[in-house]
Amino acid sequence: MATCPGCALLCDDIEVIVENNMIKETKNACRRGAARIKGCINRLAPSIAQKPSDLESAIRKAAEILRNAKSPMLFGWSNSTCEAQAKGIQLAKKLGAVIDDTSSFCQGLLIEKFLQKKFRTCTLEEVRNNADILVYWGSDAQDSEPRHLSRFSYFPRGESRQRGYEEDRIAIAIDVRESNTAKICKGHFYRIQPKGDREFILALIDALSGKVPAYEPKKILELASILKKAEFGVIFAGIGLTYSIKDDFDILVLLADKIPNFHIMPMVGHYNMRGFNENLFRETGFVNRVKFDGKVVHDNKYSIVEAFQEKSIDALLIVGSDPLSSLPRSLIRHLTSIPVICIDPCVTMTSKIAAVTIPCAASGIESAGTAIRMDGKIIELSKIIGSDYLADEELLTRLMGAL
Amino acid sequence: MVTVMELYQLLPKTNCKICGESTCMAFSVALLGRKKNISDCTPILEENFKKQKEKLESLLLPSAGAGETGMIVHPEICTGCGNCVVACPVDVANDPRGAAIGCAPTNDKVIFRVIDGKVVASNIKECRRFGKNKVLCYACIDPCPTGAIEFV
Ligand code: SF4
Ligand code: SF4
Ligand code: SF4
Ligand code: SF4
Image (cartoon, rainbow over all chains, first blue to last red; front, side, top):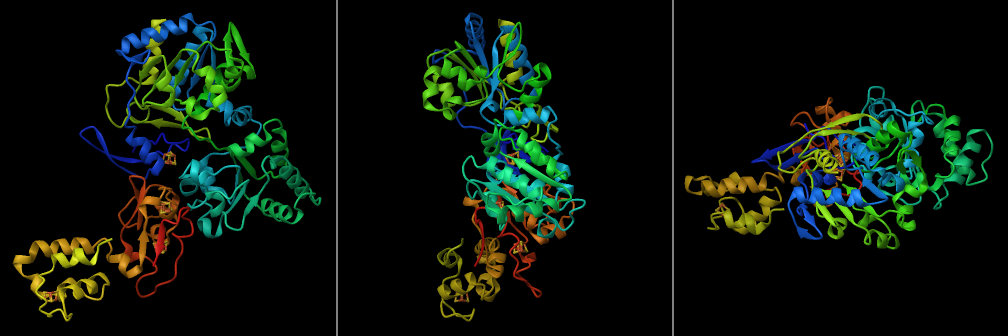
């Protein structure tokens, strides 16, 4: 059995048929996972200033760039193993660098609340065995974590949910659009206005407190009465919800207080984003946006987005991420004006503009390690096929040596 | 899907009418529509048509259930989410420790499995829409987010 690094569900029931060290067939992985396991066609090659080089020279050049930078940033990490992430944090300390990951424009804020134990939460196995009311809030699990509903949350039979989804579970979607997940939650889809989550939560709190809510009273009262009946409820908090209430998470805590049988779980996309958040939190007390400046400094200006806006960094090491393809164009200008070092298994938009590229093994496929599932469970990643590429962890060790 | 022409190309093409159809082409149509069996064409059972007969059987096999239950899966739009695998009552009954609880199927008796990221259906004769006590089951169609499973 192998583990799929396609998303933070980290499905560890994947069968892979290997022939001549090539992946021939996958069983049980969803389409996205199967594509991830089969790997990319365009493998990255070592290069310096867009010209082919050997690995050792590329590492030496990368070390030189980082050594000479006044304010380097190390970014990416959500597609790396915990072991590589720990190395990355050490490297940031050694360089006195800024370190940030994709969670600073994703679920980081929410995960921080979980690590601070602000919410009652549970594991996905507990969801499978016990959950009767499921609320997908601002999250299209069906598209982002394709096996979420079938492996754990809605469809399977569980120890105290023997009759499965047909009779024992109710799935509810709260979202700004009728997503694929919402389509499955037939009859229990609550459409909200963009950024309307706060208003919706307040109305729901009113309804749960026995007051008539100011906003869509009929629907909200109906929803409140379903939530109240839960024996084991779960709110799957997606990025839609996080974005909308990021300045005031306390209202979610307030809502959780009103429904004591509910648990909250963050929905995470990239396979080991939560791993990075936990590793950095253990080290510094923060999940992202940190500068090692003799001491630990945490500030919004250390997020990749603000750093680009402020043009405050003068070199960037990116591990397993492609910010050029996901960040707005206005921010990218700065990215193209500083030396970028890219460690990745594949050619990406970012690697194409990088001053130095260093290929690595695809983690979970060509190298092993551990990762943290969206619910916090540690999952082993296995090495499925052999390869000459080094794991990102090993490359970071060499890079540190070359400093 | 197999076509009438593909089947016709493999028949003896003598239009001998032994099968009860007026031409081999008509027999191909009947084969595809499950109104006749390969063995109704006795000439093809002879040794010199062995290869063609085997080819015919293999062509008709995958859709053997589909013809009877009318199931069609569209792998090109399937996301491999596995909802159908876990929701199908036959899979639940035949694999209580695997598919039924959301895990990977543990035996070959399930109808749905996901291979290379797409659903593959087998054992279709077990489908509840088929056989003596048939019921109009929607347990694989309703949970599918993309409409990749159809019954015609
Ligand atoms: S749901 Fe996620 S982890 Fe599971 S197989 Fe699909 S991509 Fe991989
Ligand atoms: S019995 Fe066979 S050979 Fe004769 S007409 Fe029918 S299909 Fe053709
Ligand atoms: S119709 Fe019902 S029994 Fe038949 S394959 Fe679909 S879910 Fe299974
Ligand atoms: S439910 Fe639909 S999309 Fe999901 S695996 Fe089955 S056929 Fe494919």
